[in-house]
Length: 353
Image 1 (cartoon, one colour):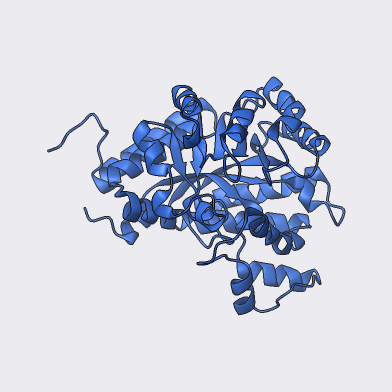
Image 2 (cartoon, helix red, strand yellow):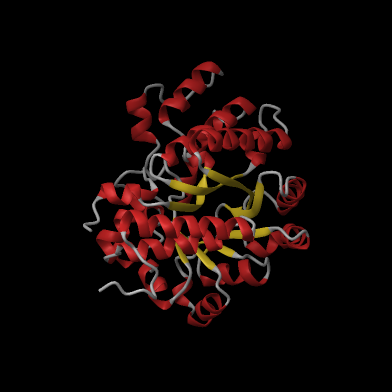
């Protein structure tokens, strides 16, 4: 079967690394700004499309993050968060995403008086309505922010504990890596791990492998967001591989922020060939102007990924998800069956030649 963009769009998919505040629709930003009387730097769709998505440019991670000032300005009410979460589920359903973990930091949505609890429940309700209407399952990952404060991360970790098994599936640490080490937030992760909650941490994106080392050994991360620079420490890479710690790879985003010299030089395929658990993700659908289908197409064009490879990384993503084990088993079986019946992709131990 020829792997066209249409075929890639139809493949069942799993997304583990998607930021809610980087994945809005342009039309929704404009509409919410009008309804809530928010001043945007640009008021028409064409200008916002030039200002928000990076496109073919490349920027520093700090410049990339600065674009979130616009999206966050319209995400300060429960109804706005509910709508944005629902629309995200609708959008990903159009490319056959079966499960998505949506991450954001509730503390960034309290400028106008919304409580942290409201910031969680409104997103959860939007995701649940999306599941009912479009059949996409989801989970929330709460993000601590490196450059705010360890105290804020601890507060968010406590919120994560309160909403455990109530829509929240994990805890993350995001934001600028340099000068804001993960180990400063280890008290928050002690709380997370002591309450048997899953942890993922952005690391090795804009800083070296020592950032990944801290995420794993100081904070107990089960997964690593990005992990682009893991290859610089072969001993750590072997540890990651042996302990099946998953890398949440975001190809387009990594190119945008100079995490890699070029997409062709991205270590994604190197990790995959070494047997490291890797997944493909969008990071920010709006800011990086991407979809999971586009990320798959990059893997096809740059790394000669086959349908079997896409089956492999999709099942890896499901295995690495923060869903309960029995739920994962059911979804893995369903995804494997769809690859077999709809695309003729058999498990690796069956040779149809």
